[in-house]
Every structure is written in structure tokens, then in C-alpha cells.
Image (tube, rainbow, N blue to C red; front, top):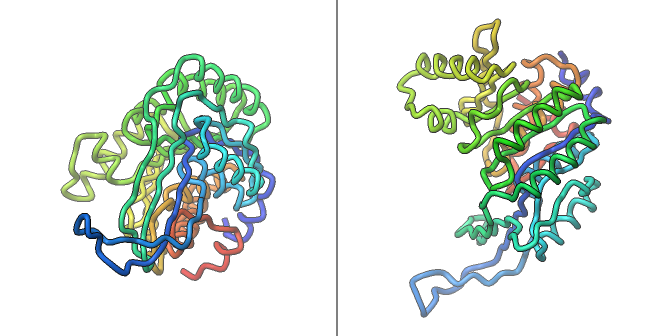
Length: 321
């Protein structure tokens, strides 16, 4: 499908993001001296910025592509959660699915740097599993919202929200309401996502979870096809950095799309953009290859930006391959 024709089908798609919500903090300044206390630079901060990260960044990417978005996940009851909710409202994303959990820390990743160079990152988070009561609350939110949805994206960062029980219930509800499912997995629940439409690990995650190191492409292809058969997903899409992405399906040969990133300034959040654009395009009725091509362009756009970023339809259409 032509990219321009595909883009016209995106506005109005109703999407839900289920996953680990995060806040990204960027603190930038200048270094003019070394600390007398230790051999480390002293950074005088002159600029601070907050951005949505993790599953929240997926929600923002979907919004940038024209979707009607609801984010479903958990936060703490702290200042970080207040900032996150404020950003959701500012960006026009429905925050009703964010469940505050007493005593839990909202995940925040603080990047500190100078002269456009990150010097250190500080993570504050709580990765303990949520209680059964919280899981039941999340299931209740999903039961309500999936009735009107076209697409569910599960963004799993292993931060304690997604459990086998929640995943199973979620997939059951999606089947019931005929909602397409796209998954961006991590390690803990890797093999729990069965019979989904799109399963998108990256190359390293594939090797890690299969306990294999691929010596050549033939090993990679064989392992990927075996995984697709094991999970019974419709499409297995493996991203491989500068080498692009690979699509595995039941009835066709592996399809390869080379990376179209012209300049890689920052890869932060590029995976969020890929799953968002891929899921949106496929749920619009585009075939998987057209959807992957669209997502590939979107990734090229965000890799040219600094920090976690999004790509608009206009930017994707204007992107020169």
C-alpha cells in the first residue's frame, strides 16, 4: 500500500496502551570545574524538561499519528505521578486508565548532561509485582475500554505491572472484542504472549530469551521461525538496529527491510515509535509489509531527534529514504 494512502487511514483509530508508564527527566547544564570532593565534573543545571517515557511514550506516539488513545497502567501517588498526569492532559491523552497505587514509586529516569552529551542516568522505580487487587482493577478498566477499541499495544518493561494472569485475561478480552494486539516484550513474560497479531522483540531480546547466540543469519532465521510457531503469533517482527527489521509469518519467506535512518542522533524510544506506527498501520487495514515500511520511516525520523521523541504523519511522509 502507498504510504500516503496508508496515512489517510490512521486518524480516529481507537488505541489502548497497556504497560509500564514512565517519566523521563532531562537536566542539562555546563561543566566548568571538577568537584573538590571526588574526580567528577560539577554540572551547573540551567534547563530541565520532562517527557513521557516507556508505555507513556507509546501512547504519545499513537496520539502523534492521529489515534484516540487511552493509557492503562499504574503510577505511585507522588510528585512524579502528578507531572505525568499533567503531561497526559497537555498532550490530549486520556489518563483515566492510570491507577494510583499507594506506597509505590512512579518510575522516573533522569538523564543529566552537558553540551548535548549525557553524563549519567539516575533511575527511581519500583519493580515489585502489583497486588491481585490492582490486577483486578486493571482488568476492569480493560474490560470497559476494549469494547470500543481497534488496537491494543502491550508495552512490557518488566516493572511489575504485567503478570501471566493479567496477560492471559487481557488477551482473552481482546479475542472476545476482536481487538488487534501488538506486543513489545521484555524478558520476564516473553513466552506468555500467544496468538497475538504482532510480536516485536529486538535482536538482542530474541537471543537472550532463547538462550542462543546467532553465529550467522541462518541460525537467526531458524530460531525466529521456531519462536513464531511456538507463540502462534500472526507476525513476528524483529528489529535489528542499523540492519533494519525482519518479518516472519506462517506462509511466506522472511522479509527484510533495511534501516532507513539517515542520521542516528539518539535511539531513545525508537522501539516505542516502531511498535506504535506498526500497530497503527496494521490496524488501519494495511498489509504487514506496508505497515513495517511505515514504522521503519517513523523510526528514521525519531532517531534524528534528541531524547525520547515522536514522529508525526507529516514528518514520516516528508522523510527521504
